Image 1: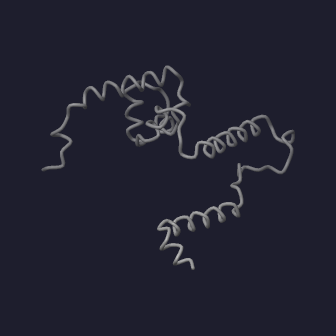
Image 2 (image 1 turned 90 degrees about the vertical axis):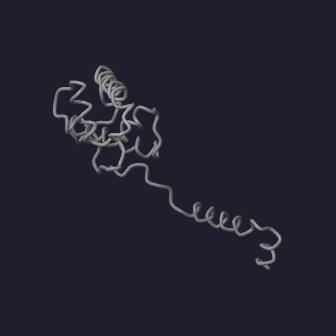
Image 3 (image 1 turned 30 degrees about the vertical axis):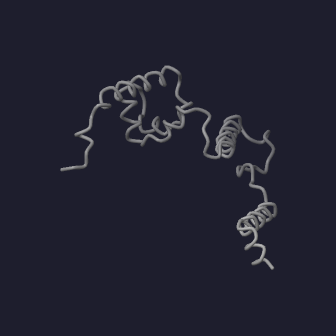
Length: 140
């Protein structure tokens, strides 16, 4: 009977597979919103512990909420730059501090002057390297 239905409707197999996937999705448990759990009330922790916990919750919830999407193009592009190139850009931009640690920051964690300096160096690098072709070729 199912073979006859597939012969009449060529997309019947696809529809059946979608129905099956829908049933499996409905039967699955919803994902846990946050894995960071504590067994004691917030008043039993110090202010610093509560702040660290809230930062952990915020970061995890942002990761879950974004599901790979970004709220702006700058943050997305910054995340795609390799760690070594981030360090180089921050060095050129004149940022102070431990560049290895700073390079692990998300784009929105930089202050506006820091972001402006980094963007300025990226524009300068784009102008300087935009016309290169021979140095980029793989031919020996």
